[in-house]
Image 1 (cartoon, rainbow, N blue to C red):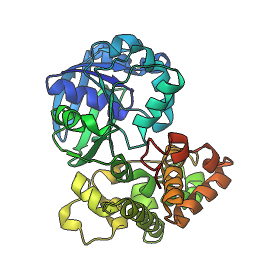
Image 2: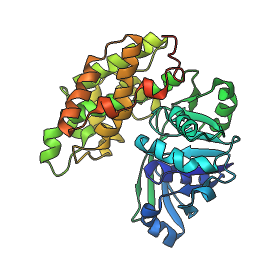
Image 3: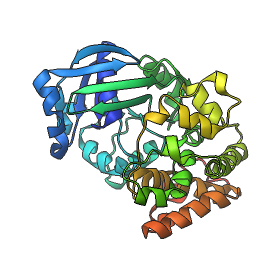
Length: 358
């Protein structure tokens, strides 16, 4: 299969090597100002690829800042970017996409399909690819660009998959399942979105640790910042998320259950408290940061996660007091108005998100 990958971070580079290892043809897009980080890979002709402990060398240098070149003839375009950049990349990609392509948002779910479509409509571009998204990045991974080394610690074991238009859900699911056999088909885009665990896990505990982040040179949220006390706010957000799902007609997985199913946590530890599991997880405990208060755990997961869930609750009549409190306090600390700048169901379009009759 011919695959284009838009993005150049940990997930994007890992996806490129993973797809090549599975026999696919891959091109990767990287912005011109960042392409120098691949100097070592260009020098070596590829990357050391450690896939859940098994090491190999993968030849890969088809990395370009030419979007037209990267997207040309691709059957699947994987967008693996920060959710705050979706509109930016949609504008950049718009002149080069075709009706025959499938655009897959392989990121923590942020209603990428509708946001991309809204850009196309705003620019009066009539082309309409197929759009699909998952609830979480399909990898637990880190890239060392200076060594040209990718350490893929976990291929996520269960990933929820939806399409914007249900008419092509089955065909798209079959296509993407060839790339990621562990995806699970979901009829509802909302279910996939609400199975994104980042807005639930990141903002609350990060907010309760801002003093520590300000003071410490190095900090690890998962290892140090999720404690028997801070996890209570995480669980409060969890209950509100579960309530949103029930009001929409489906049961969502719990924070602990979801991470066990994905492979981040062990089934044998299901009776242990969640904070202890995060502290000792072979995957999570190795993730360092955040080391600055203004970081993606707050800015991205609030603006494109919690604000969206709050707006959903407001429309369907589900109170979200803990979610709202996090948004208010983070807005105060970071001196910005997340309610004003964040993503809402109204901005997406009530009809597009299936809420026009609510």
